[in-house]
Image (tube, rainbow over all chains, first blue to last red; front, side, top):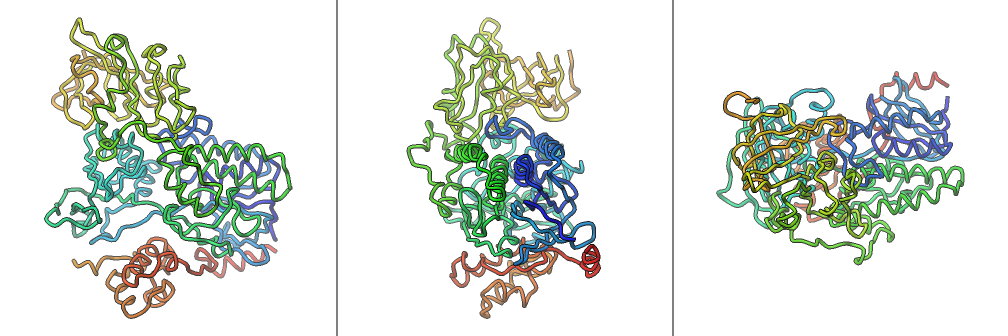
Length: 544
Length: 92
């Protein structure tokens, strides 16, 4: 039996699912093939709120996005889903074979969308085959899918978004992260993620690398060293750290094997992660009717993968049915992608795509420059005093509660705007990459924005000079959530202890969606310093 | 432990020393190294080791990484038993 489809999609991650929904909604007889037993790809491990545009799921946790997308998929009768199915090969007569239900089946699709994603990179270092050395994806799978604590003390290698986010998730699971090692001079991921770790006391060691893992039967430690500007080891800087696991988050490589086997031209573009298919701005490869989407087409965030998935799906609709009604949406999606990539953090991907097609080149005028110097933040994860001061209202206004948005880097993200019921938060110039600004005339200090920020970068402060005290409201996502009336230890932006404070309110309702908002009262001098709290370490928890 | 003992291909237990020796002997393509040392022929099908080996070839020979990374891919992409192939035919 040959199974005939309008479009066959390989890969059931965010890109593949979005492609299937777009194709299925527009009437294509669609087949979605996923190797694993479940759909959702990496989304199902992502417990954090997503960055990006409010319109495209930003502000929603990855696990919830996966569920929403799966619900949409299952509501469409045009789509057949095959999980536990591995695509095996593609042949000249347009036949695709797959291993499904212990049988090699034949599929004849009129068009195809390849969304196989990426594979984690590995690092060569001594003893790198010891048990206890994980890829970041494995750590997430253990913790977030199976509920297994992978280790007690972890050293993270790599400070890209994956390294930073997984470090944070490890801490949430009660694992100690002894440090994040980064070979580059600057932190690779979004700096709000780095700041989240710093305030929890995790050091980020830039210009460092791992030399070897220590241990005989399993990891017992790691030797790291410092690097010079030429990425060479600086002599005499080796030191050994105690840990029982080493987690590698050193980047991803697109999984393009199937494309080259199919005869689609590929090329090596370092900025996109390695070998990628040659493709147009409409995601069509050199083989007509074969489209690509997601990490396979170039390593990027999941938000881009979802947009690309839909774009590929709509282009398949156009290819199969010559349906021009999808054109408006196609234009819109391309604009959205351009928007996501137009800021400083999109530079690498822009440069990579420019090697594939002209359209990706965004004119210099369109790219906003950092308005402020964020060098210190980029090197350490802790903002400079000047950065912070720029976010504060005048002294008089500080007597009433106000929001401080410690978001300094230009990243494509805007859920804070919609989270404010008073319209007090706006993004200048309508550029999603611009850091948000608070209109202190409109801000009431209501704390709605605190749990809505994917970077946990928003705090609400108030000064009470008459009593010499002040209050700070902060987002809290750890276990052991303090209660109202409890005394807690206070910590600053680099995790330094600042004394103690009293919890005056705890918001933990549906709206907060597991990101509690905890308000503490403390000395007036600490108001703009406190960025993290923990239940008192010494002695019992004291609830008044 | 010496640097040469670092495992590059975890599926087939191929060390950095072996890879470097082969490159110095003149085996400077992924295809040749794979056929001699079996790296890339295990369960992960070279997903972990290929970029690492390509980097070694580039470092020793000065060849362009773009050129090195180009290689042929053939179906099937996973292990398939004869039984599975035959049961597929029965479907027809």
